[in-house]
Image (cartoon, rainbow, N blue to C red; front, side):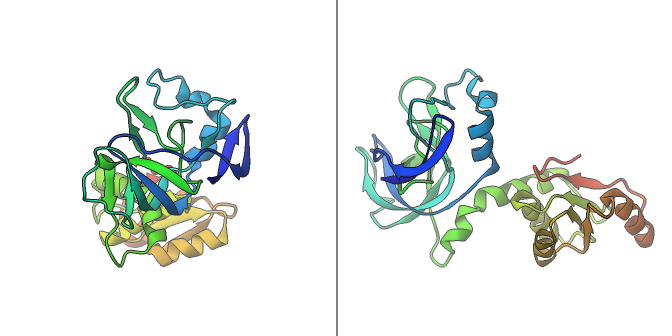
Length: 246
């Protein structure tokens, strides 16, 4: 298959071995994939995860690794033992973990040479962790579900109420997912800061009310002004681009 291959610390587009589905696995043809920051982190700082002792992450400069763990694919084949819930032609996504019978028990898709990711034409996923994409849902939208799930999770975990003014620091994929989750709950005003005008424009389209260029102003100064205008004195609820609430 043709893929973006990581080997020897470098990325290149070329041919590599086709993945083969094992027992209870599906072979997918990649339809859409997102690029996650953790793909870049794995490439540049793989020692941060490969030394955890679990064997889930493996970086080997002498073996091809295909990155990519946010994806939608079309089922084109089944490994031994698969059921009939995912017929050939089904659009599916999956948790980016390959279940294996020996060793660690799991391999992270896209960050292990035996669990090739979605920056290639083909990938293998565990049937148990796969889900059918509903009809009418755009393929590209499903590919970024993982990112939007992060913002939804952390906004939900924060238990933010109408008495607090949130700040979202960074309007990347995770920041935008936090904005969407806040807007869905009717929280306002939502303050978003970034240094890129196009990202701030996107944040506004997702439901942000106050946009801050961090090269011009501190978002915390803006928060104080907004809080004074609204008559609120609560501390800010803040999320960074990594969606970790302060």
